Image (cartoon, rainbow, N blue to C red; front, side, top):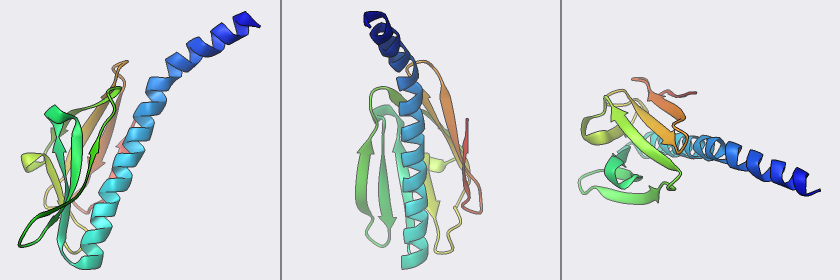
Length: 129
């Protein structure tokens, strides 16, 4: 019984970082799509700002007076590794749901496994393993 428990614990520790990375990537994609939906529904520019050094991101409403809607801080097990192609590390959606510029967000876990979230010009969001 003790051997089975030891195997279970070690396998859990092996798979936990990968599961956490997948979970964070899915949550981020959901929040990006939420910003897109808000932009279309309200006909106002919305976006996500990535604060790489602080390992967090924020949802913003970009109107005459920008308004932060929420902020999410990532766990220590998953880091925002880099943001490519997005000026000021922001993805911004116009009233049609398209982005002002396309780019990618790279997430990395404690085992150096990565997930890439690609945002295309049309506003399509894709996860690369």
